[in-house]
Amino acid sequence: MSTTTNIIRDPLPREMQPHTYSIMYRVEGSHWWFGGRRRILSSFVKKIVGNLNTPQPRILDVGCGTGANLEMLAHFGEAEGVDVSTEALDFCQTRGLKHVRQGEAERLPYEDKSFDLVTGLDVVEHLDNDVAGLQEMRRVLRPNGRALLFVPAFMFLWGVQDDISNHRRRYTLASLKKVVRQAGLEVELATYANITFFAPILLGRLLMRMTGLRPASENNLTVGFLNGVLGRILGAEAALLRHVNLPFGVSIICVARRTD
Image (cartoon, rainbow, N blue to C red; front, side, top):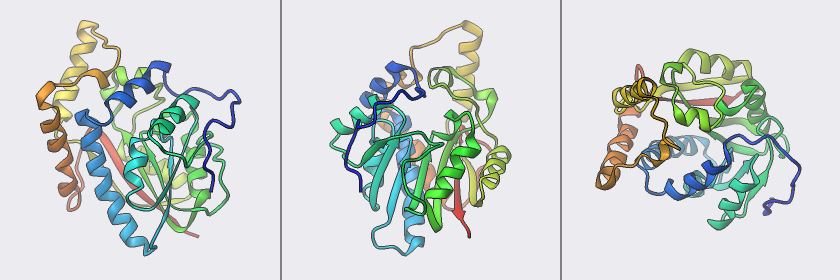
């Protein structure tokens, strides 16, 4: 198992603007969006790991960023991370996360059939070739292993964060399922998420377009003492998503399986 960071320093395409990682590292622990999303994701990971029947599953977080999701995944198995950015991996190291490597999603630096669970959490939308990235996730999955994806939904919700994060696209449920299947994975579950804040986010982004207001990052848009409350409200969708698929939302969650 690799325990190194920043060994490979070859120039790789940067997937976000340079200042984004420092903002992300600073706010991931407290911002309502990140906290609520982790609660939803934890619910899905717990269910997936329970179905794997593997005492200590090996988990890979593709596009691990500054490491907050990797910390969450470590509660469920042996979690490792890979990211294209050396800056992001430096922040992982600051968190004490050692099992990380530099590499591109389309060329993962791991052997075939190495992992029980591979996650791509707000990652696939960054890729020029999303099918190639998903094919790589399939390649490193063991037979019957799962991929957990979380992507932004609907192009009409395009906002500042999409621009500064160098997103290539936002998805519909149909378009995400299509590329997942093209990559050779079987869709087990796919649903929209964050229906709770769909209307205010849509209105906020329409207002930004009308007024020309462009904050440095939407991740900076915290709401003081309401931050924790909003995070709990968003996170409460975890219970809802255990029973129903939502008809729309700001994001999409997909669980897919490698079948051989």
